[in-house]
Image (tube, rainbow, N blue to C red; front, side, top):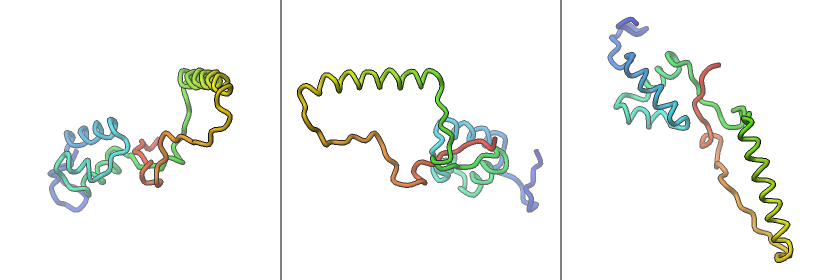
Length: 121
């Protein structure tokens, strides 16, 4: 690794240690913002952005573009939960004639809220 960046100025923040720290932080929380990472490491957001894009070759994708492939265990858990819900509904149908309440787990307010860091490949 050279000791100068593209402009000829010395690299003081872009070190192997900081690159590894940023990579570890992103892997533990993919939805973190640049400001949060920069505050944690006490370096500028511009340098964090540079490290993420140039050295780690990562970018942030919105949730609608993130593939949602489930593992076999996740699929099986969904089937099991669905069967439990069907049994519960059949049991409750005897006692409840009409219920118009809808429950939501979590609905992000915007694409920005649901975006997360991902590797180039």
